[in-house]
Image (cartoon, rainbow, N blue to C red; front, side, top):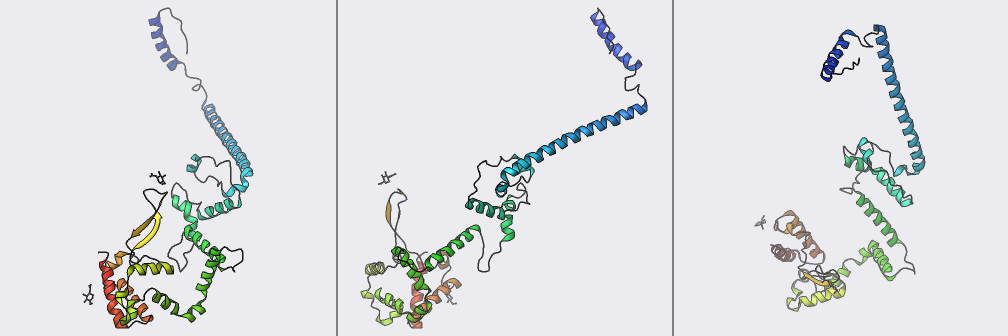
Length: 323
Ligand SMILES: *[C@@H]1O[C@H](CO)[C@@H](O)[C@H](O)[C@H]1NC(C)=O
Ligand SMILES: *[C@@H]1O[C@H](CO)[C@@H](O)[C@H](O)[C@H]1NC(C)=O
């Protein structure tokens, strides 16, 4: 830009403006003065420089990333289970994996189970459920005898198997009295030969001690000799539940959990829920319950007609109770 020093400021501004336009018109720029070939070469050279600089920056980035990755990898190679490689752009915003890592047997097993249940091919930002549980869905099959399967089922089944191992073991002198009783009880339940041999006799003896089941006793049942207080007392003494006339338990006081209180409540009904009984006597579930009662009474020696009549009366009483 040509500079003309002029004492008059206003004039100087005017001159500058006109000088600029003059220089544009009359003096072609340095670029305009180059030949066509020179211009093309310059354009090509500039492009090449940009490309080279860009490549150099990318390469540096890749090398740096590779080195720091290697470093990280060597530090945590054993921890591949726990610190999975970042999978997605969204994970880059997650905090660094914790510096303290648990490498005990239990932790490694737990981590392995977790990873086994995951589907790392799924982006957690797209479908977190599939990402965290996809592996479980793919690998697990619901066994025929089950309607569902979950981690809780698996843990519970595992526990049952362990418990079975414990109670099936032969009693030893080191066992506590409670453990010995559990082992004996389990053994007696599994001894089906002896159970079949004794048949219904133990049950009949117990029923007699309880005062007898009226439908089985038939005409020999003496209702005037029945006293419900005594019946509750006998049940208690024989070690059976009291929850027939009243539901009785010792429980935590909801008003002060440091106390235990005696809780007296209405007894449960014979079917799992009152909703069955509310469907009435002719409902198929209620009918199944009724037929079951009749079969039990018959097996214990009741007359079928008596059983049908009396058990219908008692069932109708039970149906009316929750209304
Ligand atoms: C609960 O019972 C304990 C023991 O009697 C008593 O010390 C405590 O003050 C009770 N708490 C309340 C909230 O009443
Ligand atoms: C049950 O069915 C019988 C005959 O099918 C009928 O006579 C009786 O009224 C029904 N009882 C109820 C409670 O619906």
